[in-house]
Amino acid sequence: MLVLGIETSCDETAVGVVEDRTTMRANVIASQIEIHAPYGGVVPELAARAHLELLQPTITEALARAGCSAADLDGVAVTAGPGLAGALLVGVAGAKALALALERPLLAVNHLRAHVDAAQLEHGLLEPPLLALIVSGGHSSIVRVDADGTFTQMGATLDDAAGEAFDKIARFMGLGYPGGPVIDRLARDGDPTAFDFPRPMRGNGLDMSLSGLKTAVVRDLRRMEAAGEEVRVEDVAASFQEAVADVASEKTIAAALQSGIGTVVLAGGVAANSRLRSRMQELCDEHDVRMVVPSIRLCTDNGAMVAATGSNLLAAGRVAPLDVEADPGLGLALPVP
Ligand code: KG4
Ligand code: ZN
Image (cartoon, rainbow, N blue to C red; front, side, top):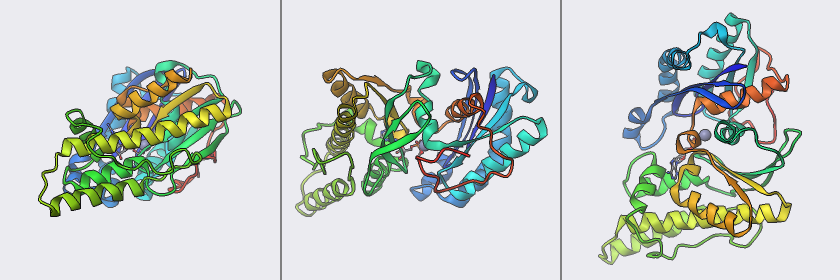
């Protein structure tokens, strides 16, 4: 079973090909970072326009790398939401056209589920129930995945998403966009104990709050600047990253212990963060919980993860109608279609 997956929800035009649900045959990503970097964040109109230009060549390259032709495909999967409306539309329209022309089923994929399903491309099909920590540019949730395919949110951020917090802090410090990878890199040479940043809502339920942490970083930096004190950005990066890693991993372990679920999947762009990965592993080892995390290139947005979820939908016979619409606000609990 060969499924092609198209991802255009944000700033990567990405196409992957997956065979039999777990084997990645191709994963091509055309990044738009250079287009958006001068603006310090994603410009939705520019993203949609770039997807329009890049989608067709990216599909062609993915098929070439997979060593197959479009006629060999058994299904066409696409991210239907959540994401930027104009950006999603390009992928959805392209996928519909391809599915129609090839007379193959269309699979409408929830982007957040795709982040979780990315794990099956390296670890094989995972046995539910599972817990997933989904941390990306737009979402931060702790989710329970059950055998019937339902995703139930157990906790979520009350304000900023984890990736958003990384990006905002990086922007404030003038480090560029996207902020997560830059902070991760700088943190390697920093002291995570240099600043005692708050761990909001620690020990208090499964919801998270990150805007207070962000405000604390900004306040400390302003105070030091006013006092003429030298700021080591590496120390700020390491201390901030440590606080996010503490909050996210402690909440996830609390959810695992509370639900008795023995496997935790780390998913989404922020799951690429080196300290979050190591902190989560430390806590999982301590509590005898299995941690599953995709390699870094499968954590950030990609087409193979969309093909993985599409393959699961196809195997379950959950084909989308050709008039399915992009849904920018698609919720986690709602399966597509
Ligand atoms: O999942 P993703 O690629 O796109 C969305 O669905 O949002 O996540 C993008 C987010 C950005 O906020 C980016 O700064 C963050 O993931 N990110 C990281 C790292 N790599 C990407 N955050 C922390 N550390 C990283 N190494
Ligand atoms: Zn994503």
